[in-house]
Length: 331
Image 1 (cartoon, helix red, strand yellow):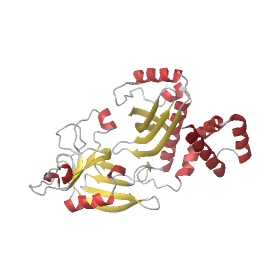
Image 2 (cartoon, rainbow, N blue to C red):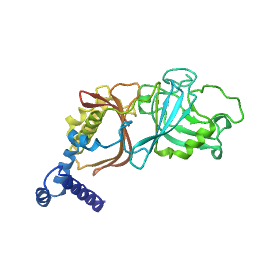
Image 3 (cartoon, one colour):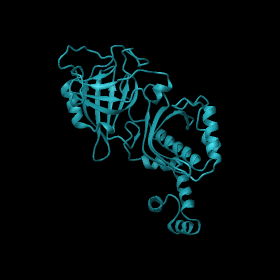
Image 4 (spheres, rainbow, N blue to C red):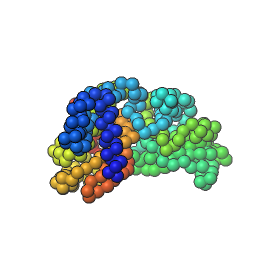
């Protein structure tokens, strides 16, 4: 682990040297010679908190649906128009429109709130499983079905419930309706075409009552990325006050822990003053449908300290208020 970590840090140093982000080459080498890797790493951590860095980084990036590193394809569902559109990342790392399918959605209008309300949810979801005849999928759902992650972290925060929101085909042996109980249904040749075009594990689904808004301002995304890494910086260097300032007073963690409980827990952890390594990978920041200045942030988190190790998925629901990121729930 030590060898891998050192190699990664040295690689980052070279990147910074080449782009002249931090210091000139001689100053960097002297700093490394005198103060070692930790001092250089801290300077790089601080550079990642700067909005100017992220503004430059985003210049040529495709931010059609937000800042997205993880997903190779995007599905957008417009419930008003009853459509499901597919965008796939091409060789130039741009999300290219591929096809739009006619779709059936929930019998009742509006956002899903509870089990049995016959509504299709509005939100941002992953596809977590593919079902087929080989997995004993009922013929009512056609040849294939993709299981979504409803209810997501924001749904649970709002007290919504229900389950079994799928993208599926239409009945092969039964009569079909022109609506669903809350799922998204497309024609069977369309679901099979979709299956050929996507890797479901790398596909993000965005559902809205209307057309999914595109091209959020890059300055907003740069601000959020800067704030995300300021939060990380405070976390790594145990700046308790700055870290907790990123949380709203009505924060509730996905496991039910409220702000005061979370604050006391984090203060105990930070008092250990352990050396921490925190790496974020596959970051996605996507504006949440029908919610102004609300964003869903996901990433792979790799955390290591003397007393705890974690590698896995992390989700934050945040508001952007006066260019300040405020976390109101996390998982």
